Amino acid sequence: MDVARNMKAVGVLLVVLTALIRGALSQRLYYVNVRADFGTTLNTGGVETFSRRQFVNGHGTFKPDLDVVPQKLLDYLTTDLQVSFSRSSRGPFKGTSLPPTTSLSKVRTDGRKNLSIKDDYRLRFVSEQRVVTDDPKTIPEITKNEQTESRAITYAGFFFKYFYNNEFVPPKYYECFNEPMGKAQALKKKGESQTEFIERISRLCTRLCREVRKHVPETRTGGPANEFVRPSFNDFEMFKNRIKIWMDTSARGGCQRFVSEHVYNIGGSYAEANLDLIGTYTSWLNDGGKPDKYLVSEMGHSDDIQLSVNALATRQRGFIIMQNLSGKPARVKFNFPHGMDKLKRWTRRRLRISDEKPTNEEKRQNILVGGNLMWKIAGKRAKAGGTLTLPDTIRLDQYETTVFQVTFDKDSRDLRSVKRSRHFAKSVENSRNLKPDFPAPIEKDQKVHYFFDDLPTSSRGVVAIRIAHSRPLGKVDKPKVWINNVLVPSESFSADVAGGYRKFSDGSYYGVFIVYYDLEDFTKGKRAKVSVSYPDNGGWSVSVVLEVDQCSGSSCCVLGHRKNSRACKPNNDNGNRRPMPTPVPT
Image (tube, rainbow, N blue to C red; front, side, top):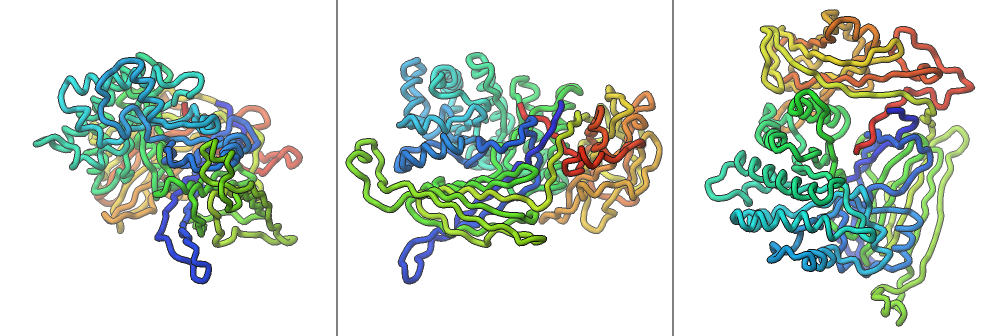
């Protein structure tokens, strides 16, 4: 896939703290801590200009009490900013009892009530890339007996077929239930084990998938909305006893088309290792074919639905969009746990509503908050040779939308394109030529071999060998690596990803190392092989995944780590950095 530019997707975690009364003003302020991680690359399909049609609120939904939002503000959000909610907890079973009938007229009526859209402006929030999900609390009623389960499945198919039309854009993703594994103790049947519960709900999701696909083939169904993304926890027991069971069961059903997780408070090497873990395992489940799609259905949320935050960045600029849809002002503090680049300038564009009673005309339109639209722009530019940072805190008035635009001091734009493909090991063997467990336990001085077939061949390419492992603290933190039986010098490990460094409460760490290798040399033999070994016992060799980059023409100057690498010409260079393309999720 040719990729010319990239965008950094920003995971945002919004934590609403206690409300306090502000001294002399006697005005209630909500104190909000905004955490942003500028860590993950996202392909923009070659588009340079920033599109604000992105995630706005991880728990986006449409509730009647949001009708207090002034119509002019909605117009600004949907028309000027083109924002859209990406995820809604309004699937076919949300917030209602199991439908007593599956008649088409009842489905249409229930569907419209369920979404509760009351004006044309609100319709513009409905995005094609939207994810809909259901509250797992509905599972006991749905699965009371075979009759109720069959009726619910039939209703779900009708819901997707007849509720969505030209007016209401159908969602691309249906995530059966939101975080059911974390609520297993409350939702299990009497005498049912956790394993049996996960298998049963995954089979239910497969039945829902088949019914929805029959009516709306373009809607993809999957799960499990895994809320505890710590696969290495307790020697991978968390992986083996939860999401692995779901994936095994869904693979046997043959319908689900994505694996979904909620990636709060992880990033960097840990998130990279988890992505490779899911990709490797699902490719094996698919008999060595393509891995299942990996869907991040939550990467930020607000405990108060009226407060939403989103941030993302191109290689030149960053954008932080904050919306306070409540009737109370908020004090916002920025926190970038993984750091943020120095800035040349920042600009804040504010849209607010003056505090006035609604007019009769506004009341007629069911607008319960009056006031005029107020617009203000403020900014700051660095002095010559200097840099800036964002203010530590800002005030966000009631019904205010703020868009921070920041310009980074160092431009990392690159116009050249590189073709990237990902490849997973076809087979794994230990030093006794046996297939080990997955992940493979690490034994002192014993190699684990990863074999690869059907790789692209080119004299203009490089392989990023991604080696994921988990080790207890105090053990040797870096493996020995052999490529086609040739030992790789330790200095060849790249600093792009630092390896396993993030430790958790079980006393272990988990992450990815990267070794770059010339593609032509890597594919010389009949079958490419990567071997890893450690000088001590303990931990797990998780996966080896290859990212193959191929270049052509002038783009080869940006592709480093090749035998015949050459520098880009200054007059053609736009940032002089190696591009990091990633395929667009489909």
